[in-house]
Image (tube, rainbow, N blue to C red; front, top):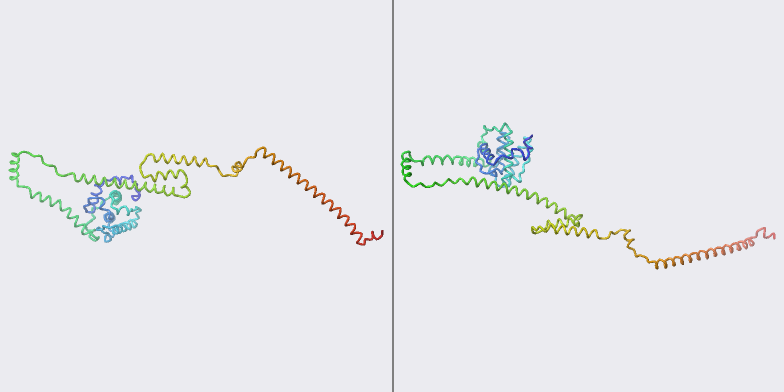
Length: 342
């Protein structure tokens, strides 16, 4: 499987924070105390330079990046290296530059897995301090790192000088044996435990914020859907909006919304349907008395119609006979040979 596409359940993402910090400090000769100190992207660039010597233009890397603009420039350099090496890993720059421990820990875990896959993770010949000299802020980083590494040595030499000679120590022990014994206070060793606890709490907060943002986006999608004109009048949408916009965490809100939804559905079912059949059925009914009067009126109208038709026929017969007589008179006057012969 390609290292660029490892899943979140891969063993690389179960490497502890202390192991990651120890690996970074050993490989790059740094003194990081927190994983989020690698949020600027400069550490990731130099890790790629250690895995592929000369592949990263270290003069473009800024170890003094404090604002988001300078950090983004470092990640642009890193993305160019990924493109050159054909690495398809997606860099979530917007999350990394926020300095959240969980996001930076996951990215450094992936970086360790990748570097371990290149030449078996052996980078003993890499001179990290020398390669940082050409970077912006690299010299200051080397100076701080060397000062931090020399501090334990100075404290050890001061302790050695403060020790008394053997004979003086014996006399001191002799006097101390005669004095009453007192309980010595243990050294303050609780600070590392508190730091580990703080880091764990930060990781929990980051995880909770991610989960909160995820569910908030889902609720926002539901709200936008409920505001659509096509569905906003439905009873179930009204019930969902009542639950979404409830100002208090009241258990009865769900029950009230459900009751209102059922009531609206029942009201919609009881409303009459506007159809031609229903309108015809809702026409005024005719009583037997009204029906008899209506039949009488219809019979009278039919009789009147028959009488009109008979009168019209008689009129047509009379007019036709008159027309025949006029035709005869016209023949007599027209000078027909038959009429003149008589």
